[in-house]
Image 1: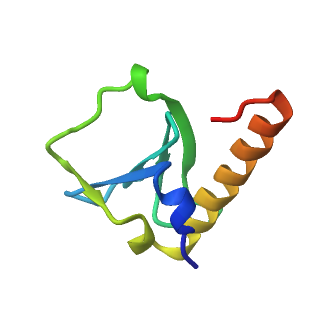
Image 2: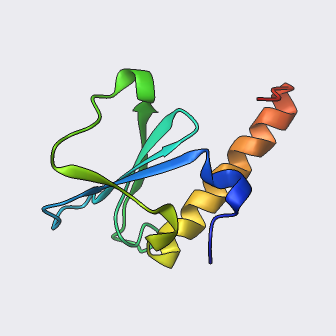
Image 3: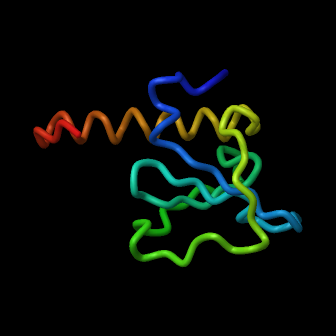
Length: 97
């Protein structure tokens, strides 16, 4: 499963290099920031909204930008679902950006 080319411009993913923590990925979708584990849909997994980009201290030296489509399938599924929800909310509110 891959994120469509048309949606890639809205998503950035940073991986925490040392690993071994719950919040392995920092995912930016539009201007919203989420934390994710390798399997966010697992009962012990993690997917959480953390705030907006303007509220975050990003670009940690312990994180590196990675290819979105190199993520585990479960993370990609949650990103696609989040993109879908954001698009539906934009349509309802009349936002066209």
